[in-house]
Image (cartoon, rainbow, N blue to C red; front, side, top):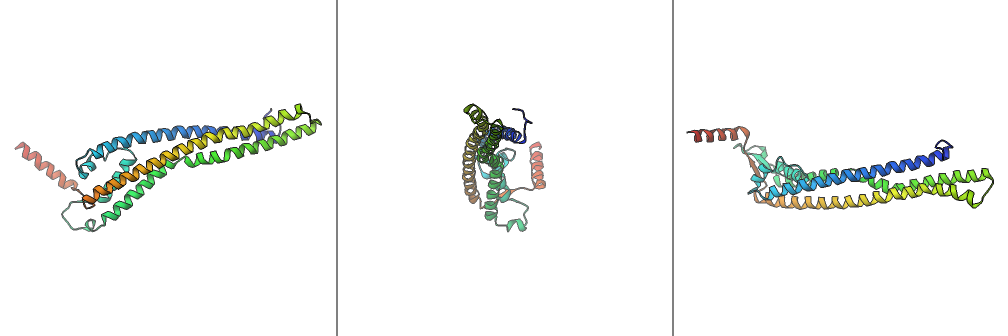
Length: 239
């Protein structure tokens, strides 16, 4: 068929090309999400090995600050919520309810990680739900073109009808072929998202229990004080 033969035929071609574009987007997102989840799994496994191998919560805070991953960011949010400066003064940081702040920080960070992992899934869901109807729309326009051609030919024989109608049904077939992978990919990554969210919730619960043992406080020496202590130690060693 000539792409510019008629407006109706052009619409049928445009629908098929649109569905092909949806298919490219689907497989592109499948690849990107697969890489994202795979990289995140490795990062989280490495982080948790370091975290649970630490001797204390303070030691874990020093070990994992530079580690990437979703679990690492949840832990860093928790450390930030309970860390206070040991400046020897009864300032306002001592009066903050660190328990409530820790709960809020962990919950907010988990929500941020969920939003990051959810990116692209809405596109897959939209493609999976709309592609069959877009294909059906192309078929309807194709059938209209076919009926117009049959009317102009003045013949309703099987040879005249079968070819144009069969060509029009291609759009519906393409729509279904695009929708099925999109739905499967969406369901697969949605399940992985739920599993990751469950792992983050479990880690946050364990982190909360550890923080509870330290009264929801993580003491951090100020930089100047820590530098002075380090300098004194070096002088002592030199002497």
